[in-house]
Structure formats: C-alpha cells, structure tokens
Image (cartoon, rainbow, N blue to C red; front, side):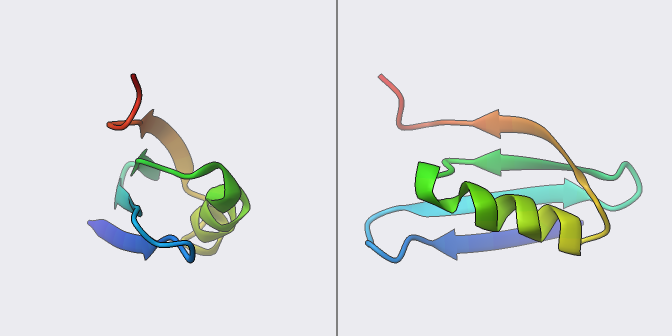
Length: 60
C-alpha cells in the first residue's frame, strides 16, 4: 500500500495519495491545481502508477 501526504506550500490544504502496488493504481484526494505536475511525477517515480481516481472533497 502506498500513502503520501503533500502539504501545499501556500498552506491550508493537504493532498492525499493512496495506492496499491499490485494493482498499479493510485487515487488522489483533494489535489490542488498547482500540484498536478508534482503528483504526476510522483506517480511516475512510484513505478509508472496509473492515477485511477481523483476525489475533491472541497467542491461545491
């Protein structure tokens, strides 16, 4: 199992990344727009994991 917490440099928001190495999939909770490149790079660094789901708990 993969778990990462990424804290926004501007503060106030955390992004969570969960994944399964056997399935090769990740899901991302509350990504910030300015963190997209960092998240994609992390997925690649973890072994070209597929970002299967994105969940936004702050949407209106």
